[in-house]
Length: 204
Ligand SMILES: Nc1nc2c(ncn2[C@@H]2O[C@H](COP(=O)(O)OP(=O)(O)OP(=O)(O)O)[C@@H](O)[C@H]2O)c(=O)[nH]1
Ligand SMILES: [Zn+2]
Figure 1 (cartoon, rainbow, N blue to C red):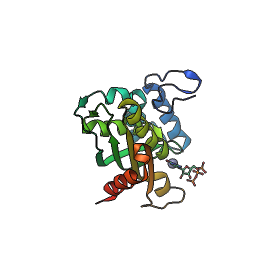
Figure 2 (cartoon, rainbow, N blue to C red; figure 1 turned 90 degrees about the vertical axis):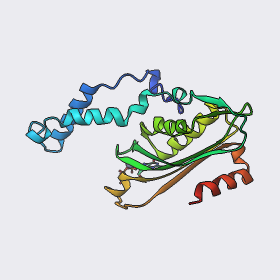
Figure 3 (cartoon, protein in one colour; figure 1 turned 135 degrees about the vertical axis):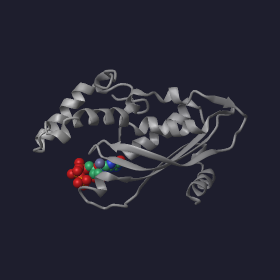
Figure 4 (cartoon, helix red, strand yellow; figure 1 turned 120 degrees about the vertical axis):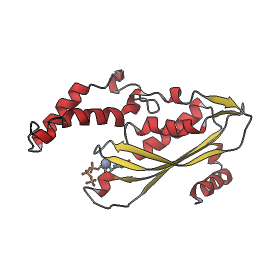
């Protein structure tokens, strides 16, 4: 079973290895041949290597652990919600390997100890999970679950609004359609607190 939070193991318990750039290059070369192109023509000669490097970067989150991102914590004794809005995200839909992009809003109520993290770390956290083959729902819950587990937050709320290229450039071809997903945990599940958080998130 793949660990739903860290994704540090693949099905069958195999550890995720390093990115195999040579293998990725030959796969892209094969794809070019499959679509009827000549991978040896001048404009395409460097393409397999370029695409392999691009995937190494775009899927870099497979080799990152969320625990390593939420390392900087301060004890400020702050016990109200902290919310960072409009964090730009780009991820890769695991069904079509096409990007989906939009914004994430991340809020949490710190642990009773007052353990909080740096604001930029919330943006780093969503990137760790976004830079993996994903579905929007899983990306949303992985961020919320990490805040609860690693920061021992009393509550967490994550809302992601995104447009999926697989819905705009192919298939149904509906550019502009936005998907909103949310994950709410702990004390933020309480209806008053949740409504307050949602109104802050939706306020423009
Ligand atoms: N729930 C969810 N669905 C997604 C996400 N990204 C892509 N999809 C959907 O995954 C589905 C895959 O459906 P399939 O019928 O297997 O594939 P398809 O024939 O390419 O589907 P169409 O996109 O309808 O042409 C599509 O409906 C996509 O819109 C996501 O993040 N969450
Ligand atoms: Zn898709």
